[in-house]
Image (cartoon, rainbow, N blue to C red):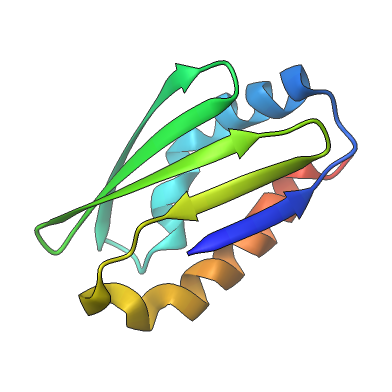
Length: 99
């Protein structure tokens, strides 16, 4: 799953917002389904790991000059969740990146 969101913010502001709202990522999954951890591997990359139904799902948020790319490597078993997850990421991502 890969979602690209445009923004008009500085990279520093995007990183600040991502850090402040990282705990909301678990809410992209159906309630109680995921345990999510995040960490920053570089200034412009937040790594995400979602534990879902005993599976570890890696993901990342890459902060660009005028866009953010949110990616998760969904296993085939969870591919049925791709559409709802993409919709949630787009909706909440646009809310988070609104000026």
